[in-house]
Length: 264
Image (cartoon, one colour):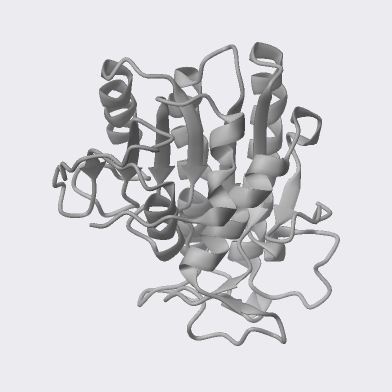
């Protein structure tokens, strides 16, 4: 695995203390993997294959390490298994470095078992529960175990990938019931976490993010709807730039890749 530089993310080195940890949950996914590449300074990775990848760090590395936590299905870290999330958090804590950046880059829209519902006639309780487990409950449990690792002083950043489809205000087309509802739930979970985190560390930023229309297996079956199509690296770079520019007063918000606030 190689390291990639990104001019859009390099400014984070000016706002985050150096030498800490960045944690990417969902790193085996398209966008999560791009964040790992752009963060550049990965030392140990917990991936699908549960391998530990060791390599030298660049001289200008912002983080001492980027910890890569894979999405559901990983034999080491499973988003639907709280015990595995707790164990991963314990391993991170053992490193003795401050966690300064957490990116929850997991997300589920469709697979061979189910797709987005086009009508209420397609609603199924088990499929709805699965959407919530992967898009809302799993990330909530991840935050439960990862947020306590953040220091109480100095700037820290938490970003979770949501989707514009989760905006109640912008939902004029209907459909995609499970995806829309679970992403809306994620927005509220992160907003609540932001309020609690802000009481512990006034310099914290905790937000949800819309990554845009990204070239990925998740979006492949669906058109861009006239929106710009981004490569995974382009989306990740823009999102890191957005996170860098946000102030603690904007914590709890929902933002797109152009840094525009999305209404809940």
